[in-house]
Length: 491
Image 1 (cartoon, one colour):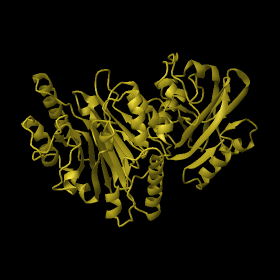
Image 2 (cartoon, one colour):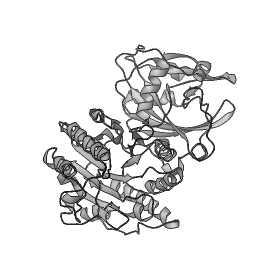
Image 3 (spheres, one colour):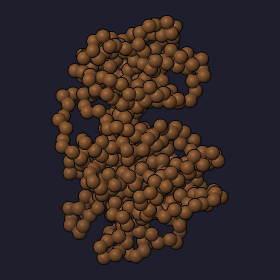
Image 4 (cartoon, helix red, strand yellow):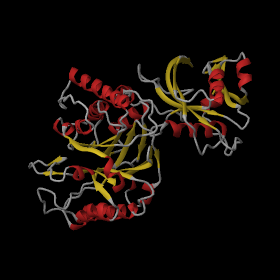
């Protein structure tokens, strides 16, 4: 980050990256101030970090989460994930904090990649081109001031001298090389643990075979990608992994399309995770002079993890998927609202669709609300919004409009107190007739009474309970064109 500031001509206050305790809090404050300062000065920077999290235990994942939460980068690419308690903790904590999360969802025994982003990002189908060990890649499209950027996270198989693992790595690299062909429709950022070295790596290791160096060459010569670190540091010697004998290897990389080369501000290794044993790898950061066009409303992921379900005794599995509106699972811990999403769905007459709901334990307590519910693991709020509308109404949404507001509320339901934070999106589908059969949970069958379309005048005149209570005024502002930026609602 200091490289970015110096290149931009900003004054720099150096902080020791190995600080702990109160100094760690100071680092988090400094990171927040830096983002505000960047916004105030009008400097648009896209910042990314990649770290091999080394299939962490739940305890080490908690420490990794504390460190990652202190970082100022917008996008985090975590490699060597698994279907484990530690990796679930990371995915669920970032999701609960409002990050856009894309998870390759490796099956038991396999490895994967996880993206957590403060900027809106949507999954794309690039990784579907991988036919062999596809969970070792993840990809998404990041809307920016240049248009969509394709972000690819990779965890390339490692190997020993055995023929089986050598062939596994060779096959995967060949498959990935083929998948990268024809990806120039979008400028590309490729990050992760590639488990390959540059051909003139120092020191030279005879163990690496020609096919491994060929993959590195193919990234630059065939796919026209630039090694960001080497581009900015032509003669520097750096290592992201160090063996027991002290031999160093630069395994972790960030590549970008040549069209982005002039926008590279910095690319540097951060050794703190390796030196403090958070991982056996160092992290790698990259900063580019690009603006992410849609920043999400996020909170601190280190306070959003749920220790009771991830560290304590296993909770009994629910009979069916639960929703943010009518949860059957235990409430989120204090200070960690469950994340959800809803949709303000308008038809061609500017009427809004509302769901009539009640508390099954208090039948006289009923209200009208927007369709939506709670995030499932690995979902973004936008993913949840589309899924919940389809499940509750049968309407399929091909496109979501902007986020209109974020509503945080505490309420009593079925004998318990709940805490929710929901992103509310606009949608104006051409077809508002159900295209699929609604798929409601047993809990929803007990609590949902019906649905209807409301005009803004009907909302203003009704004595029925509306959620949010300000819905008539919010809809009026939207139709008048004065609700142009996301707002925060607290109830």
